[in-house]
Amino acid sequence: MKRIILILCLMSSLNFVYAQEHTHKIAFNVGSGLLIEQGNGVFCIENELSYKFNNYISGSVSAILGRELGSEATNYLLTGTNCFVSPFKNNKRNNFKIGLGLGFGFLDRSVTASIYVADGDNPYYQYSCTTSIERTSALIATFIIEDEYWLNSRFSIGGKLFFTGFPREGFMGGMMVKLGVSI
Image 1 (cartoon, helix red, strand yellow):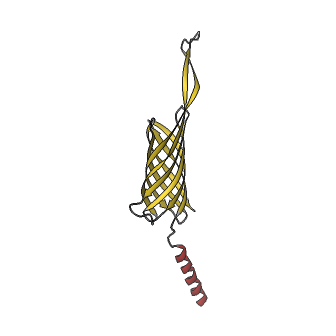
Image 2: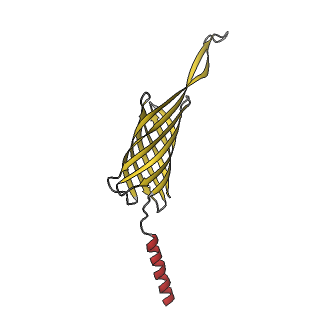
């Protein structure tokens, strides 16, 4: 009987040690979502490495790859360094944060030209061909609203809203679902 009580006390203390809160200092997040640019939908994938400085401030480095869903072949690459403030502290399972980022954006857009040729049966037959690719790169700023929930001491799930834009292309807004792992 003494052995059983001793084993139960030992298991109970191990469970208490395991249940202590993890700090989540460094995390790697992967996200996928939709970016809206001038009425066009863009499917995007994000990779992010984040670091918690203290209970209120954290930072991250991210890269977002995007491809327009329409007929034009438009590719996006948005990279940046972000700084977040957690108004309700980020030491619990749920972490709501607001941030600003600064980075570079790269945009490749193919320009399609249409040629109308008179044909015997159809006088206005149309041929379409890609004639050139417009490349744009710019320094961009990003506003981010993010919420993450830690499922356990290693894994998290979250959502993100962000707003950014290119100087000549206009503003873009997006949302994505993110999965994370604590390193």
